[in-house]
Image (cartoon, rainbow, N blue to C red; front, side):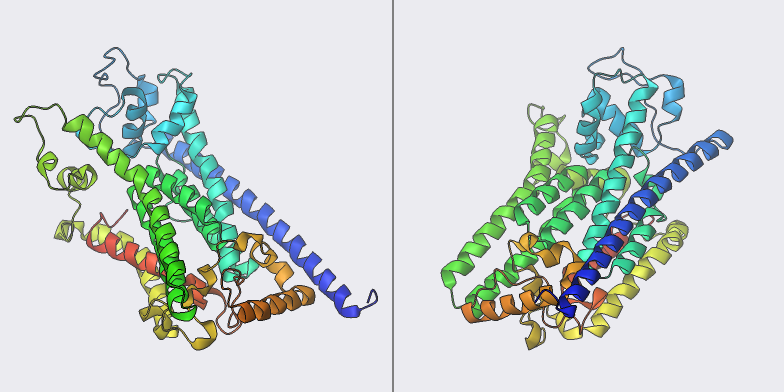
Length: 441
């Protein structure tokens, strides 16, 4: 009925949520931009007062291929640490073995402005511009991802503001690969939870061109594939469907790994093929000649427990707040939902069917509830969801189950089943940072 008060109330509520959602997007955009401007101003201010602590090599040594190409001294002083490697790769290509530790996405992005002479300050300006713009877009994706998972606009906004002003912000505003990686990583995660798996695989594959840990994002599709194939085999009793799901998942995973592996093959071709026996490097003779792991171990001392030295204690103290926060969040989730956590969702309570239920759909992006949390709170949308749930149960079709499970109210926000793969990812990265990496990074 037109005069139905419940329909009018639902429309008013939905309009309120849309307005608040738009306001939060605007606030996230302003916060991301202001945080970058503030950080860049602080960088300029402190570099004017103090000389930066920098043990990286200079950019001025001429390229092997173009010996006459050098960088002006004022511009060289503005480029420190890993930025030296990225800009030198743009100018000279991958000349030395250790330069292959820096993946090609950022140098390729800087090559888009190759019409500019690499000796001009404007070229470095574009490097800063690309990374800071990527950070702003990453913040927007981060907000949308948080909103879709946590279903709380206020918590999603607070999380995004913490990301904009996080302790590692200087890396996101320098000529480093962190900003591009964050953009592709968060973008891939967002498209993944919305059911756009092919697009998510593309984002994840590109993230592997920015940083090596981008290949770990394949774990999300592997997690989904496990649960979908399990459901198809044991709940629907459809063996062929389970095999099809596994094949598609393996294909997407291979697509994510392929850019990183192709770059390793490129390094092998440049460093190993055509070399004499005396010139060939030790890693070239390995059964699996993986250049990246050799570089990290040989040049930077990265390896299991290799950073456990008394002189590195200050770096462990520097990393302790973030590692402690990560550990507390993982322990909190595990203690709150032990059965769900330790079984990887396969032994979740029956009302949830499976932790992977929120990732069983290939087309969640078409559902209004995945695009707008506000609309899902209205009466008409709830009735529509309930009708869809009943139809899906009758048909036995899980491919169209919406992202909200029946127990979403019982386990809201961070404790929802959909957060489990992100908690596992966090746990793996925290352990790797503590036991393998240079922990302060």
